[in-house]
Length: 364
Image (cartoon, rainbow, N blue to C red; front, side, top):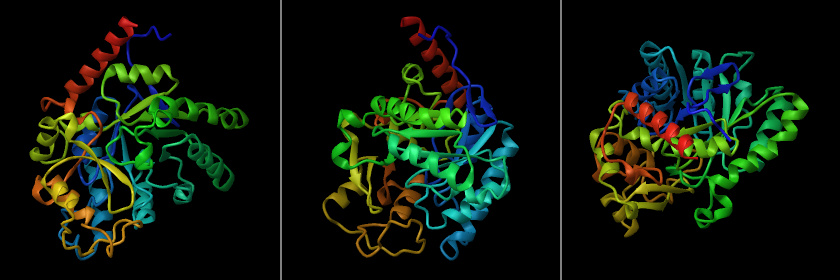
């Protein structure tokens, strides 16, 4: 039983965060340098989302690769100007220009790359001898966690320092079949211990420790305590950071959370071939009625998207949402988005989490 009333530290390789809170990487541009720096300043781990990060660049439609790489470097540098804490980026393996984005982030010296939406088997090759940037995959199963740990070590002699285990309560694209989202066997409470158990032999053989980070539907300090007691070393939270002043999204995006009800959180079939959790609105209602939005593909942003069959461009929809133009897009959200009631500062959010954690320890 945990008797310490304060949140524990989180160690990822050579990095140590005072609090075991990773702010989830939310695209498009929902978590940029503003939010990441604010989280890092509170001694958590701030994360910049790389997907379509160049959406505001003047040449984005003409040369999305150049725009995205330039914007990624700008955001990392701006976060560094605003904070001396731990700054990370989230780079989805499904991105068409995944390699270029990963290489740019490593050359810039970002602290951590989180990578999911596929199995990032070749991520360590971009290090090219660098030991500064820690590489952390995002998985949804014990099998995937062990596969990556073994492959990275065998192929690159790279020891996976941590792994994010994302359950079905997360927002955005989900690493599960739609029919498995409500199956208790796939709950985060079951997956986290499975990953911890699966990695034990690898850790013992290599004499290493892999920090397991729980993600997906974690909202309170009591939730953090629950997963720490299940063996996790930290948590990743995204939804709760949306309704902060420092979140980089438009106010309309944040208000969509605050005004949502439990029944508004729906599972959609994304054009990229995965289920996703979003807040129901006029745009998604139109999609559900079979009203195709004329699609052109100027970005070719995701490997898994087929413009010939996609009912709409997900990049355009998410860029519109980031800008607050919700008639032309929709808002991804975690299962607890409806619990948001006000917009607060990140500093207050961390204080609330610490208080909730201490209260949960005292009540146990």
